[in-house]
Image (cartoon, rainbow over all chains, first blue to last red; front, side, top):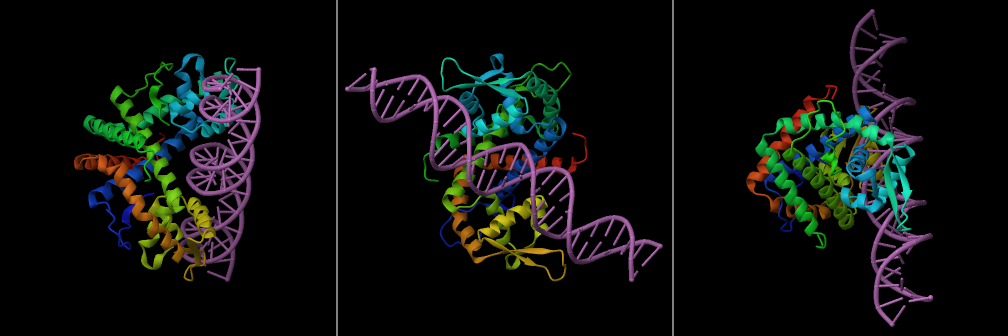
Length: 168
Length: 168
DNA sequence: CCAACATGGGTGATGTGTCAACTATTCCGG
DNA sequence: CCGGAATAGTTGACACATCACCCATGTTGG
């Protein structure tokens, strides 16, 4: 996922390849993305026995009344597919971090509910994880760089959400 | 992977939480990272029947004499673990994109070799993929933003590679 | 020469994400 | 009130990444 754009030959059509600066930025970005994720995941797992995905789910549950959310609302909020949520909730349920509950008002629906065990897990995990994000990312960045990162990310996300029909 | 840092209460220790700007940047970054990856992967798969990982391997192989590399050199270059490479090469071999070859000079060793089919696959896939990276990412960014992204990424990667022993 | 160790690489189990297909309920027009 | 469409959620098959462990070959000190 890192040397992606060394490839610059062999195709004769008029493809708009990346210029040198863009190539460098893209490779550096891919590498940061891959390794930062790997590192955070590994340490979170080792320290707290949670994956980043577990963490995201638990965070959202602590942030919602009664620690109860409808499954698809959780999915929308995390920008996950419904099947991903479903599988993941199943696995977390097995570990006792959450439990499912039927919804009275809509027979199709289900709630995901934070268990005490889940709450303890996230409260134990969060400080260390945040500290690590700070250390690996933000302590190395100026305020302006943080602002630019936010701006870039937001712009790309916007582009992604508008460009969902185009044939690519 | 996106609402990670709404969590700001419930812990009384003196944890250095993220400030508002950092939280926003972190969430936006996580979301960009997740969705950009998902989108590029999905389209690459749909258009060319390759994953990002396949692509990365094939790119490296086109970039090396005879399209032949030792397995661990490939791993080091992509910053992958050896078992990841091994599994992945196995799957790519089944699909005819690469093949393995024994190494005479070192009986333990093995080469990964690009097949004609693999070369055709990467040459067919690359232009569209690059075009999409441009469209989704670089066409939305000023030159300065690209430079900042590269700088940020590089600095975080450096931090990651130096901070490999610390207890997190 | 040989025992210990390092190195190159593979394997199987497990957790995870995606896609397509499925079930069950609810909604909505006639 | 009934039949079809939409909605909520689950399931199974598959690709993928990681971990721990394994085997074979090479290397090195005695």
